[in-house]
Image (cartoon, rainbow over all chains, first blue to last red; front, side, top):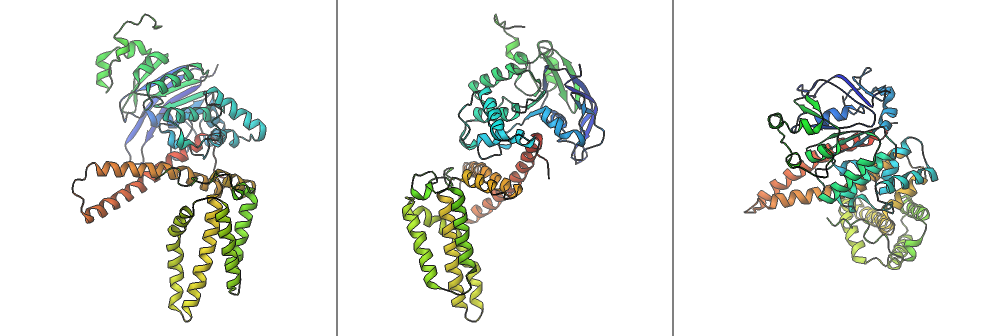
Amino acid sequence: MTNAIEVKNLRYRYPDGSEALRGVSFSVGAGERVALIGPNGAGKSTLLLHLNGLLPERAMENSAVQIAGDAVTPANFSKVRKNVGFLFQDPEDQLFCPTVFEDVAFGPRQFGLHGAELAAKVGAALAQVGLTGYENRPPHHLSRGEKRRVCLAGVLVCSPAVLALDEPTTDLDPRGRRELKALLRELPAAQIIATHDLELVVEHCSRAILFDRGAIIADGPPATLLADEPLMLAHGLERPHILSHHHPHSKT
Amino acid sequence: MNPEFIDRYSRLDSPVHKLPVGSKIVAALVLVLGVALWPAVPWQLFGAVGALLLALMLLSQIPPRFLLRRLLIAEPFALSIAALALFQPGGWHIFLVMLTKSTLCLAAMILLTATTPFTDLLAALRRARIPVVFVTTLALLYRYLFVLADESSRMRRARLSRSFAEHRAHQWRALATVAGQLFIRASGRAERIFAAMSARGWEQK
Protein backbone atom coordinates (compact mmCIF):
# COMPACT_ATOMS: atom_id res chain seq x y z
CA MET A 1 0.00 0.00 0.00
CA THR A 2 1.32 3.49 -0.83
CA ASN A 3 2.29 5.72 2.06
CA ALA A 4 -0.02 8.59 2.99
CA ILE A 5 2.92 10.99 3.09
CA GLU A 6 6.31 10.47 1.49
CA VAL A 7 8.94 13.20 1.89
CA LYS A 8 12.36 12.76 0.29
CA ASN A 9 15.21 15.17 0.93
CA LEU A 10 12.99 18.26 1.17
CA ARG A 11 14.88 21.55 1.18
CA TYR A 12 13.54 25.06 1.51
CA ARG A 13 14.95 28.55 1.97
CA TYR A 14 12.93 31.49 3.22
CA PRO A 15 12.75 34.44 0.82
CA ASP A 16 15.40 36.17 2.96
CA GLY A 17 17.84 33.35 2.14
CA SER A 18 17.99 31.61 5.52
CA GLU A 19 17.66 27.85 5.44
CA ALA A 20 14.35 26.56 6.84
CA LEU A 21 14.38 22.89 5.83
CA ARG A 22 17.69 21.13 5.32
CA GLY A 23 17.03 17.86 3.54
CA VAL A 24 14.08 16.35 5.41
CA SER A 25 13.02 12.76 4.68
CA PHE A 26 10.30 10.68 6.32
CA SER A 27 7.15 8.79 5.48
CA VAL A 28 3.81 8.33 7.17
CA GLY A 29 1.71 5.23 6.60
CA ALA A 30 -2.04 5.24 5.97
CA GLY A 31 -3.94 5.96 9.18
CA GLU A 32 -0.76 6.59 11.18
CA ARG A 33 -0.75 9.43 13.75
CA VAL A 34 2.53 11.29 13.87
CA ALA A 35 3.45 14.20 16.14
CA LEU A 36 5.87 16.84 14.91
CA ILE A 37 7.57 18.31 17.97
CA GLY A 38 10.33 20.85 18.39
CA PRO A 39 11.01 24.40 19.62
CA ASN A 40 9.45 27.52 18.13
CA GLY A 41 10.99 28.34 14.78
CA ALA A 42 12.19 24.78 14.17
CA GLY A 43 10.35 24.71 10.84
CA LYS A 44 7.33 22.59 11.79
CA SER A 45 4.71 24.86 10.18
CA THR A 46 6.95 25.40 7.16
CA LEU A 47 7.14 21.64 6.72
CA LEU A 48 3.36 21.25 7.00
CA LEU A 49 2.77 23.95 4.38
CA HIS A 50 4.76 21.87 1.90
CA LEU A 51 2.32 18.96 2.24
CA ASN A 52 -0.26 20.55 -0.04
CA GLY A 53 1.90 22.86 -2.09
CA LEU A 54 1.28 26.12 -0.19
CA LEU A 55 5.06 26.35 -0.09
CA PRO A 56 7.41 26.90 -1.88
CA GLU A 57 6.09 30.23 -3.16
CA ARG A 58 7.02 29.21 -6.67
CA ALA A 59 5.67 25.75 -7.28
CA MET A 60 8.14 23.40 -8.88
CA GLU A 61 7.65 20.79 -11.56
CA ASN A 62 9.17 18.04 -9.45
CA SER A 63 8.41 17.85 -5.78
CA ALA A 64 10.12 16.16 -2.85
CA VAL A 65 6.68 15.47 -1.35
CA GLN A 66 4.18 12.80 -2.34
CA ILE A 67 0.67 12.46 -0.94
CA ALA A 68 -0.89 9.01 -1.41
CA GLY A 69 1.42 8.47 -4.36
CA ASP A 70 0.82 11.85 -6.04
CA ALA A 71 3.71 14.30 -6.30
CA VAL A 72 2.74 17.75 -4.96
CA THR A 73 3.06 19.62 -8.27
CA PRO A 74 0.75 22.25 -9.80
CA ALA A 75 -0.81 19.63 -12.05
CA ASN A 76 -1.86 17.65 -8.96
CA PHE A 77 -2.77 20.58 -6.70
CA SER A 78 -6.54 20.13 -6.72
CA LYS A 79 -6.29 16.38 -6.07
CA VAL A 80 -3.65 16.80 -3.37
CA ARG A 81 -5.50 19.63 -1.64
CA LYS A 82 -8.63 17.54 -1.50
CA ASN A 83 -6.58 14.69 -0.06
CA VAL A 84 -4.84 16.79 2.59
CA GLY A 85 -7.10 18.42 5.17
CA PHE A 86 -5.24 21.37 6.67
CA LEU A 87 -6.14 22.79 10.07
CA PHE A 88 -4.46 26.17 10.45
CA GLN A 89 -3.18 27.54 13.72
CA ASP A 90 -5.60 30.48 13.93
CA PRO A 91 -9.26 29.56 13.28
CA GLU A 92 -9.93 33.21 12.37
CA ASP A 93 -7.75 32.70 9.30
CA GLN A 94 -9.49 29.51 8.33
CA LEU A 95 -13.11 30.57 8.82
CA PHE A 96 -13.39 33.16 6.08
CA CYS A 97 -17.09 32.85 5.17
CA PRO A 98 -20.02 34.81 6.63
CA THR A 99 -21.83 31.73 8.00
CA VAL A 100 -20.88 28.30 9.31
CA PHE A 101 -22.74 26.61 6.45
CA GLU A 102 -20.94 28.64 3.79
CA ASP A 103 -17.62 27.88 5.39
CA VAL A 104 -18.07 24.12 5.59
CA ALA A 105 -19.49 24.16 2.05
CA PHE A 106 -16.48 26.04 0.68
CA GLY A 107 -14.32 22.99 -0.05
CA PRO A 108 -16.98 20.74 -1.65
CA ARG A 109 -18.22 23.68 -3.73
CA GLN A 110 -14.76 24.08 -5.23
CA PHE A 111 -14.93 20.43 -6.18
CA GLY A 112 -18.28 20.84 -7.94
CA LEU A 113 -20.91 19.85 -5.38
CA HIS A 114 -24.14 21.86 -4.99
CA GLY A 115 -27.80 21.80 -4.01
CA ALA A 116 -29.26 19.08 -1.80
CA GLU A 117 -26.15 16.92 -2.13
CA LEU A 118 -23.99 19.74 -0.78
CA ALA A 119 -26.40 20.48 2.08
CA ALA A 120 -26.43 16.80 3.06
CA LYS A 121 -22.62 16.66 3.10
CA VAL A 122 -22.35 19.81 5.17
CA GLY A 123 -24.99 18.54 7.59
CA ALA A 124 -23.13 15.25 8.01
CA ALA A 125 -19.80 17.02 8.63
CA LEU A 126 -21.36 19.31 11.24
CA ALA A 127 -22.99 16.32 12.92
CA GLN A 128 -19.60 14.60 12.99
CA VAL A 129 -18.11 17.46 15.03
CA GLY A 130 -21.23 17.81 17.18
CA LEU A 131 -22.40 21.16 15.79
CA THR A 132 -25.74 20.25 14.20
CA GLY A 133 -27.96 23.33 13.95
CA TYR A 134 -25.06 25.80 13.71
CA GLU A 135 -25.52 26.28 9.94
CA ASN A 136 -26.66 29.90 10.00
CA ARG A 137 -24.45 31.14 12.81
CA PRO A 138 -21.82 33.73 11.91
CA PRO A 139 -18.31 32.53 12.89
CA HIS A 140 -17.52 35.59 15.01
CA HIS A 141 -20.16 34.60 17.56
CA LEU A 142 -18.69 31.15 18.25
CA SER A 143 -16.38 30.15 21.09
CA ARG A 144 -12.77 29.27 20.34
CA GLY A 145 -13.48 25.54 20.66
CA GLU A 146 -16.53 25.78 18.41
CA LYS A 147 -14.52 27.70 15.81
CA ARG A 148 -11.91 24.95 15.89
CA ARG A 149 -14.59 22.32 15.35
CA VAL A 150 -16.13 24.23 12.43
CA CYS A 151 -12.64 24.35 10.88
CA LEU A 152 -12.41 20.60 11.31
CA ALA A 153 -15.86 20.09 9.75
CA GLY A 154 -14.79 22.20 6.77
CA VAL A 155 -11.84 19.88 6.31
CA LEU A 156 -13.58 16.55 7.01
CA VAL A 157 -16.33 17.33 4.52
CA CYS A 158 -13.80 16.55 1.75
CA SER A 159 -12.93 13.15 3.32
CA PRO A 160 -9.17 13.71 3.30
CA ALA A 161 -6.69 10.81 3.55
CA VAL A 162 -4.24 13.01 5.44
CA LEU A 163 -4.87 15.58 8.17
CA ALA A 164 -2.22 18.24 8.72
CA LEU A 165 -2.85 19.96 12.05
CA ASP A 166 -0.90 23.03 13.17
CA GLU A 167 -1.11 23.50 16.95
CA PRO A 168 -4.70 22.24 17.17
CA THR A 169 -5.01 22.26 20.97
CA THR A 170 -2.79 24.99 22.41
CA ASP A 171 -5.38 27.76 22.57
CA LEU A 172 -8.30 25.65 23.80
CA ASP A 173 -9.64 25.30 27.32
CA PRO A 174 -9.49 21.79 28.83
CA ARG A 175 -13.01 20.96 27.71
CA GLY A 176 -12.37 22.14 24.17
CA ARG A 177 -9.14 20.14 24.17
CA ARG A 178 -10.85 16.99 25.44
CA GLU A 179 -13.60 17.27 22.82
CA LEU A 180 -11.12 17.84 20.01
CA LYS A 181 -8.99 14.89 21.11
CA ALA A 182 -12.04 12.63 21.23
CA LEU A 183 -12.93 13.75 17.72
CA LEU A 184 -9.45 13.18 16.32
CA ARG A 185 -9.35 9.71 17.86
CA GLU A 186 -12.36 8.67 15.76
CA LEU A 187 -10.89 9.76 12.43
CA PRO A 188 -9.42 7.15 10.10
CA ALA A 189 -7.19 9.63 8.21
CA ALA A 190 -3.44 9.70 8.70
CA GLN A 191 -2.59 12.61 11.00
CA ILE A 192 0.50 14.75 11.23
CA ILE A 193 0.29 17.15 14.16
CA ALA A 194 2.71 20.00 14.83
CA THR A 195 2.33 20.73 18.52
CA HIS A 196 3.78 21.76 21.90
CA ASP A 197 1.02 19.84 23.69
CA LEU A 198 3.19 16.91 24.80
CA GLU A 199 0.33 15.19 26.60
CA LEU A 200 -1.54 15.05 23.31
CA VAL A 201 1.56 13.50 21.75
CA VAL A 202 1.80 10.77 24.39
CA GLU A 203 -1.92 10.02 24.49
CA HIS A 204 -2.86 10.36 20.87
CA CYS A 205 0.11 9.64 18.63
CA SER A 206 1.83 6.40 17.79
CA ARG A 207 5.00 8.14 16.71
CA ALA A 208 6.85 11.40 17.35
CA ILE A 209 9.32 13.20 15.11
CA LEU A 210 11.64 15.62 16.91
CA PHE A 211 12.45 18.50 14.65
CA ASP A 212 14.93 21.34 15.17
CA ARG A 213 16.61 23.88 12.87
CA GLY A 214 15.01 22.41 9.81
CA ALA A 215 16.18 18.83 10.33
CA ILE A 216 14.90 15.65 11.94
CA ILE A 217 16.74 14.93 15.18
CA ALA A 218 14.93 11.79 16.29
CA ASP A 219 11.98 9.64 15.27
CA GLY A 220 10.31 7.06 17.49
CA PRO A 221 7.47 6.07 19.82
CA PRO A 222 6.45 9.03 22.03
CA ALA A 223 6.81 7.14 25.32
CA THR A 224 10.53 6.50 24.75
CA LEU A 225 11.40 9.66 22.81
CA LEU A 226 9.73 12.09 25.20
CA ALA A 227 11.10 10.26 28.25
CA ASP A 228 14.66 11.11 27.16
CA GLU A 229 15.02 14.21 29.33
CA PRO A 230 18.45 15.43 28.11
CA LEU A 231 17.31 15.18 24.50
CA MET A 232 14.04 17.00 25.24
CA LEU A 233 15.79 19.82 27.12
CA ALA A 234 18.44 20.20 24.42
CA HIS A 235 15.71 21.01 21.92
CA GLY A 236 13.60 23.41 23.92
CA LEU A 237 11.11 20.81 25.16
CA GLU A 238 10.61 18.91 28.41
CA ARG A 239 9.69 15.51 29.64
CA PRO A 240 5.90 15.67 30.10
CA HIS A 241 4.48 14.96 33.56
CA ILE A 242 2.21 12.34 32.16
CA LEU A 243 5.28 10.12 31.71
CA SER A 244 6.47 10.61 35.28
CA HIS A 245 3.43 9.14 36.95
CA HIS A 246 2.12 5.67 36.66
CA HIS A 247 -1.37 5.75 35.23
CA PRO A 248 -3.33 2.61 35.98
CA HIS A 249 -5.64 3.30 33.03
CA SER A 250 -3.15 4.39 30.42
CA LYS A 251 -2.44 2.09 27.56
CA THR A 252 1.35 2.52 27.52
CA MET B 1 -16.79 48.18 17.97
CA ASN B 2 -20.08 46.57 18.72
CA PRO B 3 -20.07 43.35 16.68
CA GLU B 4 -23.79 43.85 16.16
CA PHE B 5 -23.20 47.16 14.44
CA ILE B 6 -23.89 45.99 10.93
CA ASP B 7 -26.80 43.62 11.47
CA ARG B 8 -28.20 45.29 14.55
CA TYR B 9 -31.71 45.93 13.22
CA SER B 10 -31.62 43.86 10.04
CA ARG B 11 -33.68 41.00 11.47
CA LEU B 12 -36.70 42.96 12.71
CA ASP B 13 -40.15 41.87 11.63
CA SER B 14 -41.51 44.93 9.81
CA PRO B 15 -43.22 45.12 6.38
CA VAL B 16 -39.99 46.57 4.94
CA HIS B 17 -37.93 43.71 6.34
CA LYS B 18 -40.34 41.16 4.90
CA LEU B 19 -40.04 42.35 1.29
CA PRO B 20 -38.16 39.89 -0.95
CA VAL B 21 -34.43 40.72 -0.95
CA GLY B 22 -34.07 40.69 -4.72
CA SER B 23 -36.83 43.20 -5.32
CA LYS B 24 -35.46 45.44 -2.56
CA ILE B 25 -32.06 45.53 -4.24
CA VAL B 26 -33.58 46.25 -7.66
CA ALA B 27 -35.82 48.99 -6.23
CA ALA B 28 -32.90 50.65 -4.44
CA LEU B 29 -30.77 50.44 -7.56
CA VAL B 30 -33.50 51.93 -9.78
CA LEU B 31 -34.01 54.72 -7.28
CA VAL B 32 -30.30 55.54 -7.11
CA LEU B 33 -29.84 55.48 -10.88
CA GLY B 34 -33.00 57.50 -11.42
CA VAL B 35 -32.04 60.21 -8.95
CA ALA B 36 -28.43 60.35 -10.12
CA LEU B 37 -29.09 60.40 -13.85
CA TRP B 38 -32.27 62.53 -14.09
CA PRO B 39 -31.19 65.29 -16.51
CA ALA B 40 -33.22 68.26 -15.29
CA VAL B 41 -33.52 69.18 -11.64
CA PRO B 42 -37.08 68.47 -10.61
CA TRP B 43 -37.32 69.42 -6.97
CA GLN B 44 -40.80 67.89 -6.83
CA LEU B 45 -39.32 64.51 -7.77
CA PHE B 46 -36.63 64.83 -5.09
CA GLY B 47 -39.32 65.75 -2.61
CA ALA B 48 -41.39 62.72 -3.56
CA VAL B 49 -38.40 60.36 -3.30
CA GLY B 50 -37.45 61.89 0.03
CA ALA B 51 -40.99 61.43 1.33
CA LEU B 52 -41.06 57.84 0.11
CA LEU B 53 -37.77 57.04 1.86
CA LEU B 54 -38.95 58.74 5.03
CA ALA B 55 -42.18 56.72 4.99
CA LEU B 56 -40.22 53.48 4.52
CA MET B 57 -37.91 54.43 7.39
CA LEU B 58 -40.83 54.96 9.72
CA LEU B 59 -42.45 51.75 8.52
CA SER B 60 -39.24 49.75 9.15
CA GLN B 61 -39.41 50.38 12.95
CA ILE B 62 -35.66 51.04 13.03
CA PRO B 63 -34.79 53.87 15.44
CA PRO B 64 -34.32 57.01 13.25
CA ARG B 65 -31.21 57.93 15.24
CA PHE B 66 -29.46 54.75 14.07
CA LEU B 67 -30.16 55.54 10.41
CA LEU B 68 -29.29 59.20 10.84
CA ARG B 69 -25.95 58.34 12.40
CA ARG B 70 -25.06 56.18 9.44
CA LEU B 71 -26.03 58.96 7.08
CA LEU B 72 -23.83 61.39 8.98
CA ILE B 73 -20.87 59.01 8.76
CA ALA B 74 -21.14 58.88 4.97
CA GLU B 75 -22.13 62.52 4.43
CA PRO B 76 -18.63 64.10 4.65
CA PHE B 77 -17.57 62.19 1.53
CA ALA B 78 -20.57 63.50 -0.43
CA LEU B 79 -20.01 66.96 1.02
CA SER B 80 -16.36 67.19 0.02
CA ILE B 81 -17.08 66.14 -3.56
CA ALA B 82 -20.03 68.56 -3.79
CA ALA B 83 -17.89 71.36 -2.35
CA LEU B 84 -15.66 71.21 -5.42
CA ALA B 85 -18.62 72.54 -7.43
CA LEU B 86 -18.49 75.81 -5.48
CA PHE B 87 -15.44 76.90 -7.47
CA GLN B 88 -17.33 77.30 -10.75
CA PRO B 89 -19.91 79.87 -11.89
CA GLY B 90 -23.37 79.00 -10.64
CA GLY B 91 -21.64 76.79 -8.07
CA TRP B 92 -24.17 77.13 -5.30
CA HIS B 93 -26.93 75.65 -7.37
CA ILE B 94 -24.80 72.67 -8.51
CA PHE B 95 -23.60 72.21 -4.94
CA LEU B 96 -27.14 71.96 -3.61
CA VAL B 97 -28.28 69.60 -6.36
CA MET B 98 -25.28 67.30 -5.86
CA LEU B 99 -25.77 67.28 -2.12
CA THR B 100 -29.48 66.48 -2.39
CA LYS B 101 -28.91 63.76 -4.96
CA SER B 102 -26.15 62.04 -3.01
CA THR B 103 -28.06 62.28 0.27
CA LEU B 104 -31.09 60.61 -1.31
CA CYS B 105 -28.93 57.85 -2.82
CA LEU B 106 -27.13 57.28 0.48
CA ALA B 107 -30.42 57.14 2.38
CA ALA B 108 -31.76 54.53 -0.05
CA MET B 109 -28.69 52.33 0.34
CA ILE B 110 -28.61 52.72 4.12
CA LEU B 111 -32.26 51.74 4.29
CA LEU B 112 -31.58 48.69 2.11
CA THR B 113 -28.63 47.46 4.17
CA ALA B 114 -30.24 48.24 7.51
CA THR B 115 -33.37 46.24 6.74
CA THR B 116 -31.65 43.20 5.13
CA PRO B 117 -29.29 40.76 6.84
CA PHE B 118 -25.89 41.02 5.15
CA THR B 119 -25.77 37.31 4.35
CA ASP B 120 -29.14 37.58 2.55
CA LEU B 121 -27.77 40.45 0.46
CA LEU B 122 -24.76 38.34 -0.50
CA ALA B 123 -26.97 35.37 -1.42
CA ALA B 124 -29.15 37.61 -3.59
CA LEU B 125 -26.11 39.05 -5.36
CA ARG B 126 -24.86 35.54 -5.99
CA ARG B 127 -28.25 34.52 -7.42
CA ALA B 128 -28.14 37.56 -9.68
CA ARG B 129 -24.90 36.20 -11.19
CA ILE B 130 -22.79 39.10 -9.97
CA PRO B 131 -19.16 38.03 -10.65
CA VAL B 132 -17.87 35.61 -8.00
CA VAL B 133 -14.77 37.68 -7.29
CA PHE B 134 -16.90 40.68 -6.35
CA VAL B 135 -19.27 38.75 -4.07
CA THR B 136 -16.38 36.87 -2.43
CA THR B 137 -14.56 40.12 -1.75
CA LEU B 138 -17.69 41.56 -0.12
CA ALA B 139 -18.17 38.40 1.96
CA LEU B 140 -14.55 38.51 3.15
CA LEU B 141 -14.89 42.19 3.97
CA TYR B 142 -17.94 41.46 6.11
CA ARG B 143 -16.30 38.49 7.83
CA TYR B 144 -13.04 40.23 8.74
CA LEU B 145 -14.44 43.59 9.73
CA PHE B 146 -15.19 42.06 13.12
CA VAL B 147 -11.79 40.40 13.47
CA LEU B 148 -10.08 43.66 12.57
CA ALA B 149 -12.23 45.62 14.99
CA ASP B 150 -11.39 43.15 17.77
CA GLU B 151 -7.73 43.35 16.93
CA SER B 152 -7.68 47.13 17.01
CA SER B 153 -9.53 47.24 20.32
CA ARG B 154 -7.05 44.73 21.79
CA MET B 155 -4.18 46.87 20.57
CA ARG B 156 -5.83 49.94 22.02
CA ARG B 157 -6.22 48.23 25.38
CA ALA B 158 -2.59 47.07 25.31
CA ARG B 159 -1.46 50.60 24.49
CA LEU B 160 -3.62 52.18 27.20
CA SER B 161 -2.34 49.75 29.81
CA ARG B 162 1.16 51.08 29.21
CA SER B 163 0.45 54.77 28.69
CA PHE B 164 0.64 56.80 31.85
CA ALA B 165 0.56 60.42 30.75
CA GLU B 166 -1.61 61.04 27.74
CA HIS B 167 -0.49 64.09 25.78
CA ARG B 168 -2.37 64.96 22.64
CA ALA B 169 0.76 64.74 20.45
CA HIS B 170 1.66 61.45 22.02
CA GLN B 171 -1.81 60.10 21.29
CA TRP B 172 -1.62 61.03 17.66
CA ARG B 173 1.76 59.38 17.29
CA ALA B 174 0.46 56.22 18.97
CA LEU B 175 -2.59 56.26 16.71
CA ALA B 176 -0.36 56.41 13.64
CA THR B 177 1.65 53.46 14.95
CA VAL B 178 -1.51 51.48 15.59
CA ALA B 179 -2.83 52.22 12.11
CA GLY B 180 0.46 51.08 10.58
CA GLN B 181 0.51 47.94 12.71
CA LEU B 182 -3.08 47.15 11.79
CA PHE B 183 -2.23 47.45 8.13
CA ILE B 184 0.75 45.12 8.47
CA ARG B 185 -1.24 42.61 10.51
CA ALA B 186 -4.16 42.76 8.08
CA SER B 187 -1.93 42.08 5.09
CA GLY B 188 -0.27 39.20 6.95
CA ARG B 189 -3.69 37.82 7.75
CA ALA B 190 -4.76 38.22 4.13
CA GLU B 191 -1.86 36.00 3.12
CA ARG B 192 -2.82 33.34 5.67
CA ILE B 193 -6.46 33.46 4.59
CA PHE B 194 -5.39 32.99 1.00
CA ALA B 195 -3.36 29.95 2.08
CA ALA B 196 -6.40 28.56 3.91
CA MET B 197 -8.57 29.11 0.83
CA SER B 198 -6.02 27.41 -1.44
CA ALA B 199 -5.80 24.50 1.00
CA ARG B 200 -9.49 23.89 0.42
CA GLY B 201 -9.35 23.92 -3.33
CA TRP B 202 -9.68 27.61 -4.24
CA GLU B 203 -8.11 28.29 -7.61
CA GLN B 204 -7.58 31.64 -9.28
CA LYS B 205 -9.81 31.64 -12.30
